[in-house]
Length: 155
Image 1 (spheres, rainbow, N blue to C red):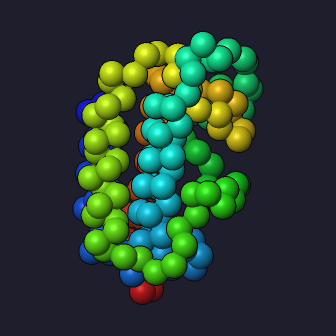
Image 2 (cartoon, rainbow, N blue to C red; image 1 turned 90 degrees about the vertical axis):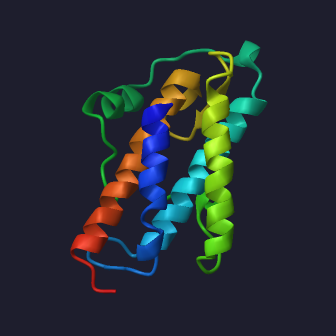
């Protein structure tokens, strides 16, 4: 959980850059990437908590195996599902509250039974350990985009 907590902290440190944007890197602002990451983190962790471990069944998934092996998500290949797309303006108070919720959820992950799971649209059912791997990959992916926006930003 330390690595995931560290990535969440890095995401939080980008709040001052929320308004920055560079359409050559991403059509979305740094704030959008922060909020999207938080939405994904909370959605996955809430799904893990609510799932029925008895219904989990592992299945081979080539795409999951490939992405987990290379250790990164290719940029610009997939559009985020509507449920994890930020709506409206970036609101600092809401984001700060979301960070508190995410950190509580991260801390609660260690107490979940191993076969609680969530269903990813491309990777299929991911129980706790692979779900944490996905969350780390996804958060790192957006942190890299944020870093590129800031480095080459137009604002």
